[in-house]
Length: 167
Image 1 (cartoon, rainbow, N blue to C red):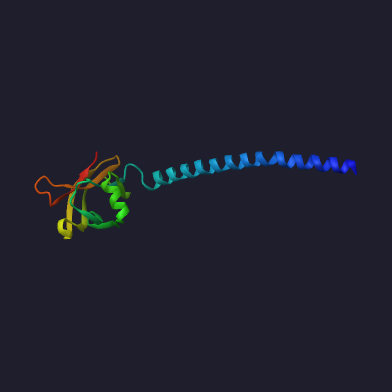
Image 2 (image 1 turned 90 degrees about the vertical axis):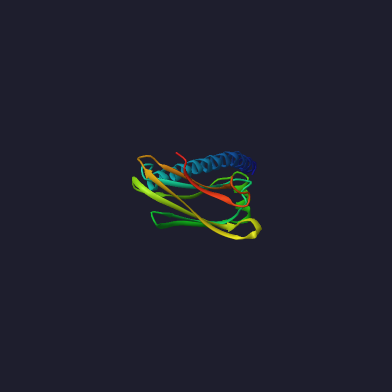
């Protein structure tokens, strides 16, 4: 009987010592899964959007721009590629200096036309829909484009809508 109690006590102490090592192994495995997931994401991005065909478009907004952005529509070579409607929270983030990646896609090398249509409300809560256009020449490297709403130097009531190559 005494032997069985000693054996049972040894078995229980082994189980309690094994528990922290299992937790450490689980934490290590979790970290490895996170790292592998990141590597897979980077590999997927490089395969889906190789640098030689990559076109990335960002949206930004000056904090003092007299415009409440509702949405943006983007076309590349007269083909609609994306549109986005902004929540109040996202609009606040843009006005505080945030930048949003609106689009990432592939285009061949050569000339392209990008048109961004900005929809929103200007001074006096008046609805505005303005388009801005940019002709680019896509080379062998990735091309980065910025769509920006900013205050106009001409009038405090009318914003400027800019599409520019970020080079």
